[in-house]
Amino acid sequence: MFGLITLQDLETIWTITWNSTFTFVAIIIFSLVLEEAGFFRFLGFRIAQNSRSSRKVLFIYISFFTALVSALFANDGAILVMTPVTFLLLRELGFDPREMIPYLISVAFISDIASTPFVISNLVNIIAASYFSLDFITYAEVMFIPNLVAVLTSIAILYLIFRKELSGTFALNHKFDGSSMIQDNLIFNLAAPMTIALMITYALTGLYGIPVAFVAVPSISAFFAIASLRGKVDSRKILREAPWQVVLFSLGMFIVVFALGNSGLTSFMASSLSWIGDHTGVFSITVSGLFIVPFTSFLNNLPATMLTGLAVHSLGSSGGMIYELIIANDIGTKISPIGSLATLLWLHDLSVKRNIRIPAAEYVKYGVLVTIPALILSSLALTVFVY
Image (tube, rainbow, N blue to C red; front, top):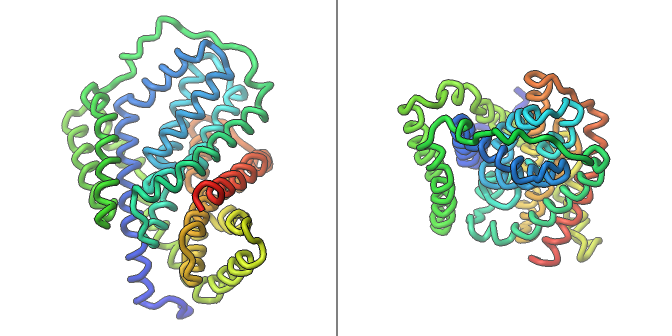
């Protein structure tokens, strides 16, 4: 209507987003198939069995397990499977809704904060990697230490915040039979080798510049078809819960952001990042990440990724700044409830399905306490150990 976007811009936007969008939806479907097969519920109860009835140990185990799920099945996948798994597990262990809050808060924050290690761990990562032509192996090598620092920092801070609530023990039903959780033994047994095979294939094809979607979509489609034909998982439920809206959401959001960029916002961000680079020396990467936080927290991390990506590209920046924009848009987004789609999914699940409500002010308090230190230390790790 306002002439801020041309048909050529639409073609550019689709070129940037198609790989990330289809890959992301495929990975979420993969995680939902495994959840329907009982894979995550089984592992969740195994975690409870190995926690020695300690609430503190259970909290730490759930936090690290969430980090692993987020890394391998994306942040939204972690939210979609770990929120119900954690809730049902804690309910089975006799926790009341208020006692569940520390564990559910950890799931929410760790799902996003731990989503930096691989290209496929977050839609933000896939978009940035596609736009800046980052291959899977190089990306993982650079992000390993910053991700580890962010995860450890977040878990430590969350533990300190909830240390009183995490004191004591819980009663474990020793009659629990883990096999009763498994709905499809074949899919359950294929989960680990399928995940490993996908990760290896992502890495190998990335060396040749093959889009991740060319691996993820056909492989996971075949896996879904096998699960559907066996009839032991609810394939219709999986298709209903798959985030198809992400396709239109991301495309629509990027159109709006591209219009804002054409109106001068990209130039403003580029000049600001350039000034930061000129005046903050060795801390320029960290300060740049903090500069991005307000945009990613209150504008949402997907449009913020597009804006910062366009700004960084216009500056001709490479290396550390590219990875920092990913870290900032993965981690910094947690300050606000509207910062990421994963947070919105989590809040919706808790309020509608679990009858648990987290006030916005309470969420923001946790967001500031956890996100800022995790972002700063992760950014410093990127500076010290990588660049």
